[in-house]
Amino acid sequence: MTSIDKLRGDEREGALHKALGVTPPDIDDWRKPKEVGEDILALRELAEAVEVAIRCGNETALGLNWEDES
Image 1 (spheres, rainbow, N blue to C red):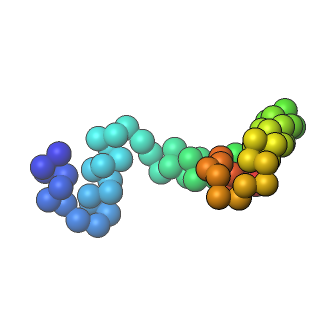
Image 2: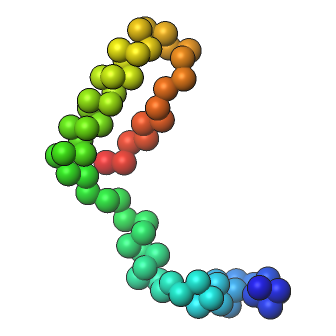
């Protein structure tokens, strides 16, 4: 790790990839948005409805963090 830490730029990035056993295609696949099936969307809709019911209109109450992934 100390050897990798001394590297800079592309050389460092390549050494990190090699040490972690990942390749650029692996990284590209990770960055691509994932398709969400209808069952997941339905469950999310249900969870959002439950959250609204539990909050009872209290917008200051803690809730789930719904990040748009689509």
